[in-house]
Length: 398
Image (cartoon, rainbow, N blue to C red; front, side):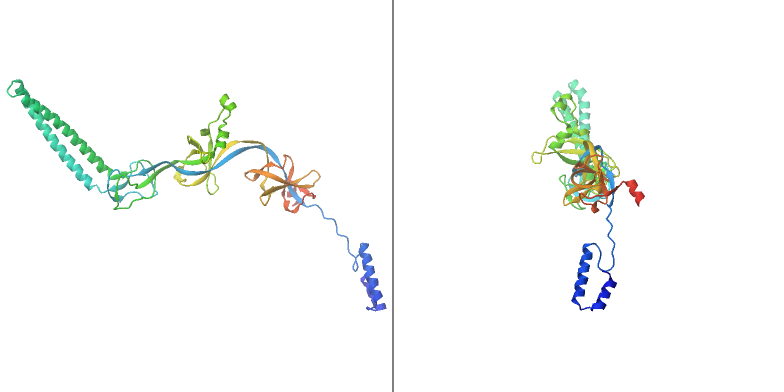
């Protein structure tokens, strides 16, 4: 019933007439059942078309498998600088954290007591040399007299023995002088290697001894990375099996090429090698420690840094790859929307593997050649229909 028809009835019979009201309500109800509106005539809503989604094809290719382990960096050589004599520190000649070379003087100890000892040793050497000269003169003078029996042979024998004793005293005095000179040189504490010198642990004026550690100098190029791997990983990479060992095909862990991933996620530009493997497996942790060696030009890497060591451990044959944006993570589970040949959507739970750039390796749930939704997966439902567009077609639609 139209609006004009309703107004005509109300004018003719009055707005309070019960019959008019019942007639209007029944007419509206009948119009609803037959699809006509009560009031202005409405058009039927058109059916919704399937949503457009971007799809890509899952591809299969051989993917390298990597192992990753937490590593601690340390210098290839860490030399503790300790004095060889006891004395008071009077000078520090290096800047902490700077690069020093072998032989550079890092600290100085008060040299005066050692200089006095050297002077005393030199004086004793002079005395011994004077005694030796006297004994040589005596022997030279009395030798012909003893041959002529002008003096007793025993006197000559005593003088010869005195000369030998004087020679020994000279040698002892020379050794004392050499020792005093060494001790005096030890008051200048030198670096034994090229490397970066650390913080000084002793202050000027402190009494130091050979037990005191003044600082540490670390050789940082190359730098070492210490990391543990499990016994299973060690055996798997080494290829230890009866067949491989019998055929002489067992690989050696020390031939493993290493990459270093720093704490900021960047990959260190220089690759390293395994320097050596520890001799035994730790029975408490079930791991064996490997030591990698990396070039460290510019001393960017420092002892104590944590990083991740990555190494190629094998190949995944015909691994399935899809874009990372095609994978939906829901409460620790992963799903992918797959479009069938009939354009019907199937939402599947999948098992994911490693991430490779913008791609994600799928271990279970998707087969090679299937179309997965990469864009628009949030507006689809399981069993619904979609209008799949490839990347090229999608660009034309836009």
